[in-house]
Length: 237
Image 1: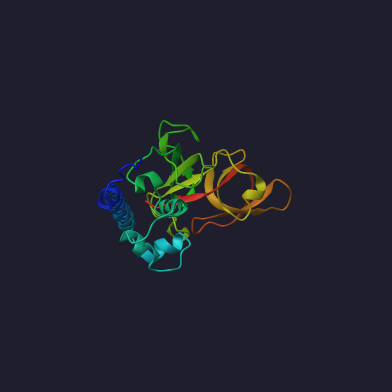
Image 2 (image 1 turned 135 degrees about the horizontal axis):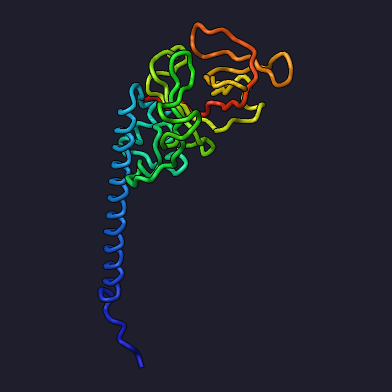
């Protein structure tokens, strides 16, 4: 017995319907993807423009990209942003990737110990002991090691590139000796309440260091240190 296979039109129609439906789904996915790219580009542009002097070229260079149109294409929604690229952009803008894609994430918190003022010297707030946590602040993006911070007060360290309100982040209570020599550090002097920003170089004998203060007008001196912590992150106000 021969079964009725139906007309050619009847056999072809379901396939055509499926094809049409698939095309509509593809177009919808494409539309949503374009909208997602454009929204991401708008957020990146807004955060970039909120940072004084941060041009598209500077942001690209901060991410390691030398094509001056790279960021422009991203901000216009003309280019897909890969995961590792999003991380680089977030680090350059001092934010987190989740914020860039519209999903604010809670940032890691670190200790805020006080301020650095005239002469580059650390001082605690009234009513707080030295190197006692005063409050918590958001940690910088991209460095999971830092756990402490101080704030620059005044423009006494302008020559060193630090301005009023800038935050400096480091590892408390200090780094290994081979990580501090020749680096900018927060230095706690041994047997003294004095702590200040400076650069350390090897001294005349083991345990001694030459301390060159970052503050202008102060001379180098040989010191013994309780601990020293390399400044690992500088966040502009």
